[in-house]
Length: 149
Image 1 (cartoon, helix red, strand yellow):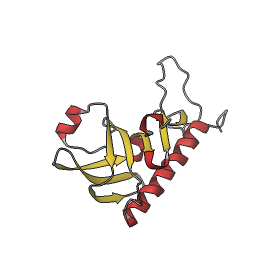
Image 2 (cartoon, helix red, strand yellow; image 1 turned 120 degrees about the vertical axis):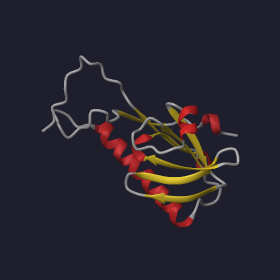
Image 3 (cartoon, helix red, strand yellow; image 1 turned 45 degrees about the horizontal axis):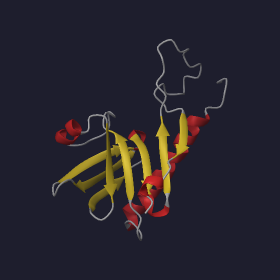
């Protein structure tokens, strides 16, 4: 049994579950109304799939926009596959939910940000073996001021 409740991890799982449900809805019926997404993800995530030229151009993180043109959206429990247009060149991507750093829908002023804390090598080891070492520890809502008109 752990010494404390890991609210950060629990919140991240809940937030990723919300994104999963939103993406499943879009997979079934498309983007409703003016909804569109800005999704920033870690391109270094071992399960992220993107073209080599995109990985070279965005070696740490990348923000994609899902709005007017996208195709082939398929969602599974771990992430989603989608083809997006980059300079008139369609490129398939696979984005794991664990790789997402921000998820923003500016049409309704909604956003999520996933924070991670880098741990020092001197930190004590976790007593609870069920907690992943690389799991994010804090969660917060993204300010949408920069997308307001």
